[in-house]
Amino acid sequence: MTVLDALQTTLADEHAALYAYGVLGARTSQAAAPLLYDALTTAYRRHRSRRDQLRAMVTDAGGEPVAAAAAYDLDDPGQGVERIKAAALALEVDGVETLLALVAQSSGTVRAWALTETTWSATWQLELGGEPQTWPGAPELDRST
Amino acid sequence: MPGRPLSRRTTLGSALAAPLVLAACDIDPPSPDADPSGATPPPPEDSELVATVVAALVDAEAVLVAAGTAVPALYARLEPLIAAHAAHRELLAGAIPDAEQPTASPATVPPVAAGALRAVRRSEQQLLRTLRDGCLGAASGDLARVLASMAASTSQHAAALTAGVTS
Image (tube, rainbow over all chains, first blue to last red; front, side, top):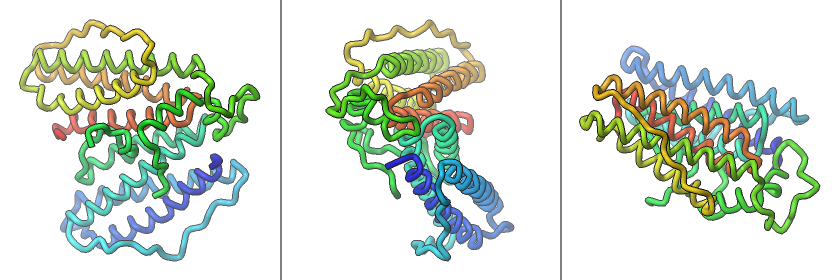
């Protein structure tokens, strides 16, 4: 896998994450669950910025940025604050795993960017009900399991 | 998701045993000296880098233990972070078995909760900088991935500590 492949994979995942956050946001009432609504909004903006940055990096690497699909086949997150939070948490957990692959495949400014985004997604998991882990994004390193 | 399903053995083993081969995946072109057999010893820059991170982990653990000793009521909150650092140190130290075990720098922590937590936060920020520098400087992509996961874990624990959340 080249760094361009890893960038395209990460970009494709960001398209899917943005779509999913849109669905989760649409199912969240700003009035009834303001904290969750704010957490989803913050994450959506971060992922939108991340997608735009990835597009630019793909172009800089000589590629044509992969386009978003018209729709994504999502598992139904259901309704309710806890289920929406769990679905958003799963997006960030998966995002860390993808970003770590980009860290491994890149160097220089791309790796620095991927590391920053990895740390953000891992830390944001706490806002979504997650707990600190010993090996976020790399569970195969955990000897205790 | 497209994460790479690396085993624990392949991750650091290959990271330190065949760094030049792994570096071929990076933006920079591979070194003409790269040994495709993977038998190349680790480049000095990665071995030293791992030793530097191990030393930083030892120092961070010492501050945590000192904080828990100075303010025993804090120990339960610090324990998950101590365990994470120990797991991180154990993995890295196993990759450089011949290296000398570092000694922790003396840690002085105020015997009050607020002061002890400030000392811990400073120490964790220092560790995060070391992990970030190590990740960005690693010749091996797999080692960079391991260090990035450690940085993410440290950041999570630090945020939980700030929020008063325990894992």
